[in-house]
Amino acid sequence: MQVLVVGRGGREHALCWKVARSEHVETVYCAPGNGGISLHAECVPIREDDTPGLLDFALSKKIGLVVIGPEDPLCAGLADRFRAAGVAVFGPSREGAEIEGSKAFCRDLCRRHHIPGPQAWTFSDLGKALGFLESHRDEKLVVKASGLAAGKGVMICEDYDEARKAVADCLEGGAFGGAGETVVIEEFLQGDEVSMLALTDGRTIVPLESARDHKAAFDGNLGPNTGGMGAISPAPAANPRTLKQVESQILVQAVHGLVQEGRQYQGVLYAGLMVTPLGPRVLEYNCRFGDPETQPLVMRMKSDLVPLLDATARGQLMDLSSGPEWDSRPSACVVAVADDYPKEYRKGHRITGLEDCGQDDDLVVFHSGTERRPDGIFYSAGGRVLSVTAVGKTVKAAVERCYEALDIIQFSGIRFRTDIGK
Ligand code: AMP
Ligand code: GLY
Image (cartoon, rainbow, N blue to C red; front, side, top):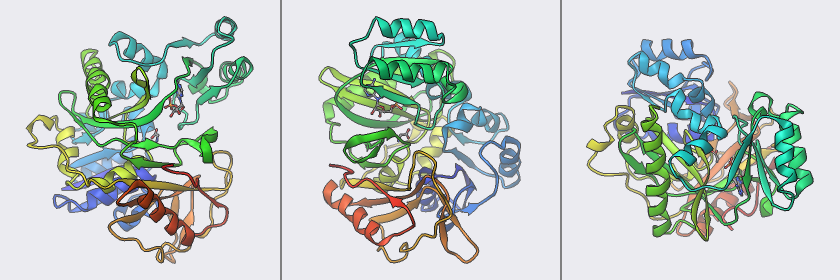
């Protein structure tokens, strides 16, 4: 089969790497891909938002399965277009993807279907939002831009003044543009975070192993939120009891809710959770694989991923004889970023050491944002540049393997967290 992966980040590199290992696959294409992806897939220069271009390509190459990586094209309805053209596609409909595209919708869905989460309030009117804050002066709150903001639209507010500023920045100052025209204000929850991803075709759910993301820019969970600075799998807080609760109260419940409300969902449902003393609570749902969670997850997955993706896309998950098999060893991913990421950052720095850092089956450097120039040399081309990922006997061993590689890999301004998994 020919497979087309849509996207250009570390998640898509991990997906292409895994898909390319499948015995069912002849060629993997990636649109548009990146420098590192070109080692495992044929990159085609079609942007994620060029729907007609992607559709023409898929039809002309007789693509048997399209896998859509990022949220923007899903929220724009790309999966619907492929489905309408008769192409099997892994990714929810535009209406299904709204679970990520609108945090206001997501909170309403949770309310309607009794899914446990923080208390949450939605506002589009500045006066009403400020009035609400006035009457909740002493509470620690989280302010979220409702729309898509590349993981950066969440502000944990230490006090009333910070909450006022966050709300005003969104509703008055135009921070996050249209995505910030509605805000969701949430009760701040304390606990341990877990990311749980499940494949679903709308009828059957196949949960994957758990993972733990590290979203803050700096060590000690300090600094602004980023797309993700590193991840480990499994998540330390994911004990069997919690996982059971997550599956029944949070994953099954959301899929039922979406389907009951007529929203088609064939892809991966990602639940970002806070495990509190009262049980797991939903911080967010995403309509796609997590980045960087996918990198450590695919390295632990022993089964062929393609039959799982294909069965999801065709609504045949129920027919699979078994779920995925996993390496019992844990894995870790450390993301190397450019200087000032997530603020403005510079690109175009030459990357060295990739050939000398000892990559093998247990250590893979996925590329999050690189370009491979005709001389074969890699240059940085994004804020997140590399996702160094390893499997080890323990989380500590996996993380150490990543840091050993990062001792060798260099580019001007390279920065990474030194406390992943601690
Ligand atoms: P989100 O994109 O909604 O998952 O939020 C990004 C990060 O902000 C999460 O991974 C948490 O670390 C934090 N966060 C979001 N919502 C809350 C909340 N209600 N209480 C505490 N922390 C939160
Ligand atoms: N790692 C968080 C996300 O993919 O949204």
